[in-house]
Length: 265
Ligand SMILES: [Zn+2]
Image (cartoon, rainbow, N blue to C red; front, side, top):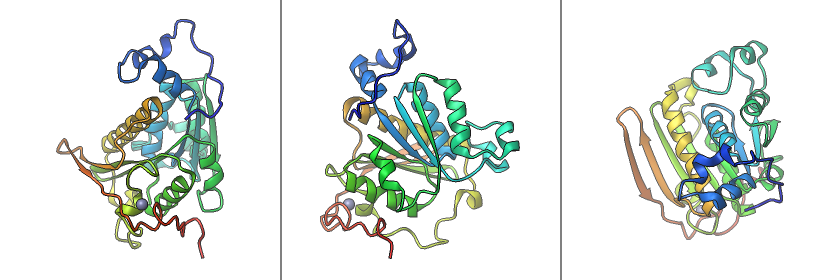
């Protein structure tokens, strides 16, 4: 999965990432792969803030952070990278997140992208990444991510949170189902209320983000993740259930390679 990004300067004794490198599941070789990887996070809300903090501290060599919005008052309860200075300035989230992450780890490359992700710009962004993390709050963007990732053959980690519940599934094109194997189309507008209407518990978002980030680290370090297994979380009751998602042999996306969301009418 390496993209030719030079490994960043390491502490002489490798102490910075020792906790991860000492895990037998990651090891020194896995940690080096993580440090040579590039990850695109689409969305810098409650999921994206937590994912980015975990990955910056894990030493991912290059992080691309995409979000069109600015920091607003309701964000402060659940979006862990922002402070009141960002709020007063109504700073673009991608830029505020990048500033904070550089104070956490100055040895990695962090690129903010202040933009609305659309069919017009998603493919070049995905082209820069080894793996994509979904941190959006809407299914239209997820279908776009799914198509662009399948088209490019890049793994991506679906994640959603609403209220105290969440879902996570790792997608590896050609090795299991994609999102359209599971859902033919995004839910009709108004069927799923957005988090700003329904509410979201900060810890539920952090749990979903932690599971997504774990899938990302497994994929980067070992090439393995729980491809095609849907994890459904309820943090209020402390439960996780997992189900295998079958690949749809007639899937218009991963089977027929018809990318309707990348080519809007
Ligand atoms: Zn599919």
